[in-house]
Length: 265
Image 1: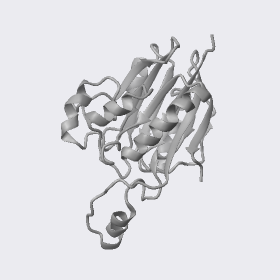
Image 2 (image 1 turned 90 degrees about the horizontal axis):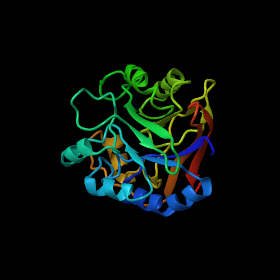
Image 3 (image 1 turned 60 degrees about the vertical axis):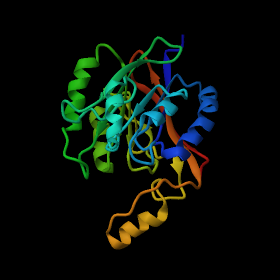
């Protein structure tokens, strides 16, 4: 049996346009790339901010195993109960104790007797002052390291430096560390020296005729006038962003990481 597990991560899925391109692209991509496990960041699926049950159900009706989140996961108060009850919708682990939901989960890869731990963390630079994501990972790693070798981390952060620092900090312990939140795919995908696949930001799956997924006019007015303007999901130039990581299931070390942007610019 092939001991490698191939993991697809889909970058921040933005509203209906993002869902539609995932629905279109995902089945063929899974078949072509022989994907064993699929993760998607879903915190922007509902009108661009938050995740309602109907939209989570739509994403999970596709061949997606787990949804990760970030600072918008709990934006919609009506979503708190179902997120709390869900095993495969994650919010950041380093929220305070007692917050709705789970910060990690351990799952089985499709058609393989391989466990995959998926961990959601959120950065603190230019974000809310939450618990330290580095120390939160330390505690979780000590808890799960004997049970599971393949550990995948979605680090949701604003600052490039913080995400890069965390990648080095987790090198050799996490199998894969991907950055999310800034919605622009970076060109630094690589396997770090101790075996952790890393990218600073996976990019967004949604409309690129936009300002990080939102209609341009309102976003421009926010910068010109310094006043609030309602964000609305844009519609044009929809693209699919993600990465594929190949991981040795026995050692938890990554063999490779590949960026996906479809269609490319």
